[in-house]
Length: 78
Image (cartoon, rainbow, N blue to C red; front, side):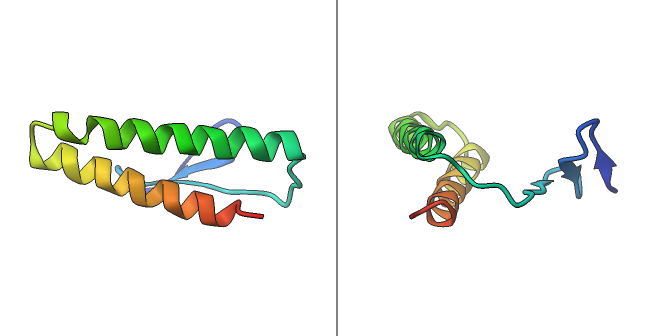
């Protein structure tokens, strides 16, 4: 199942995975710094809430998000 949103940048491949198409675009230094700080803060937040997870599925989701953060950090690393 593929659903396209109005901006045509987000495609839902199945009910759980959304893929965002990145067009070729250069980030300014400020945009890059904002993105990296946001990823760092999200990583800290997810690590902080790990002990509060009640169910296994929540912990798996949290761990996948941490993996995704690392992937994005590598993608946007200078």
